[in-house]
Amino acid sequence: MKKVLALGLVFCLLALTVAGCVPAGTAAQDAPAADATATDASGDVTKGELNVAIAADIAPDSVTEWTKMFNADYPDVKLNVMLEDASNYEVTIEPLVAANELPDVVGIGCTDWFGTLADKGYLLDVSGTLGWESQLDVLKNMYTSRNGVHFAVANGVETELLYYNIDQFEAAGIKSVPTNWDEFLDCCQKLKDAGFQPLAVAGASPNNLGHSFISFGIAHEIVASGFDPDWNTKARDGEYDFSTPEWQAVLNKAVVLRDAGYFQRGYESADLYECMRAVTAGEVAMTFQGSYQTGNLLVEGGANIGITTVPWNDKGKDQVGIVIAGDGYAMGKNSSGNVDLATKFFNYVSFEHADVYQNMSGTIPPWQDVAKDMPNAKVNEKLQAAWDASNALSVKSLEPQQAFTAIVYEQVKQFVQAVILGNAEPSQIGDYLNPAQKEYLATLN
Image 1 (cartoon, rainbow, N blue to C red):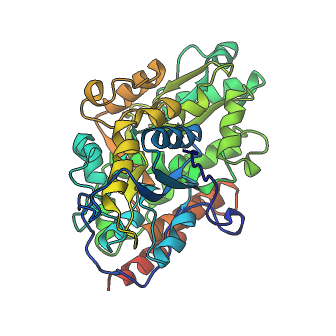
Image 2: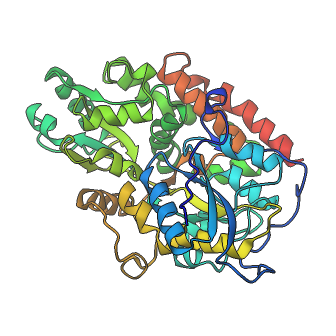
């Protein structure tokens, strides 16, 4: 049978900002999530048609490979495949939510926005699926909604790391990786003095900036400092003031790096993938990225890249780890109701053949028993060592997109980008986030 691969963006990304995907809808607004293990009346799960939406920007070939494999194994199943932008899922999903026609299987991020969708009945409960039972408990917690819906299986467990050019470090006389903020500044200056551009920053990508600078700032200034380790719970439950000196300090170090001239030339217009391209090409010495981008940074023929934990800690203080649930796979509610067939494809990509994405992206597997559940997994030794070091840190902080409510996080991204581009100061954080916090509270009433 002719293999089907309908690849393409569902909606015009040029007309929308890079985000996620969910149409605001009228139907099923408060309906409980359905069970992904429900039985299809037809009883035949080897025939039919499925609509699936999968993120393809981190490991684009994984979508092609999965589709090819599934069509070979199930030639009587037609797959209609849409591509998502992992940095802005909402662009694809929002119109489909409005129509109450989410794809049967859909790639999502681990954010409050998707948890809310699950609570409103748009995402099915995937309890009992192969991947749900096998993933780490920390991932189960992150993919459980406030009302207890188990709505996704993660494609990895992640952290934020510093990627650096080993050869340029040596040429600049840097003997060891930086382990604190002072050493990092010294490292940047030595690289600059040696004629290298120290740090690649995606100034045109607010989502990337939200993942890096503000992640480290919150981890050290808010969580590790003891100021407010449970800030995210308090912010979800009621009034919260982001204008305190501690929150104002979150982005101070990013401004120091910018004003010292350590960002690469043209950072203002660089997107995430230009940023990583510059590092792999040896044009820039360092970048902060999530561990899920390792496959895009350690490439054959590219620069000799090392990986280490993030030295955002002041001298004499410990580093802080950041814990991230990788993006995940969910099952959407729609009028076709072919849940058995959808569950078959869901298990196919989220567990049985999850190694297809795993080995292309180079991420850390999400399973409790990797040797049993993903024997074909290939994890780069450099990444594994950096992950182990990060995981061993005694204090850990959530990644911002997984801690802020959706309304506040949209303002976080705008604020971080404004600061990096010199259009706002860290001291204005309350001006951006406090109104968004009040807007969020209004949705609870």
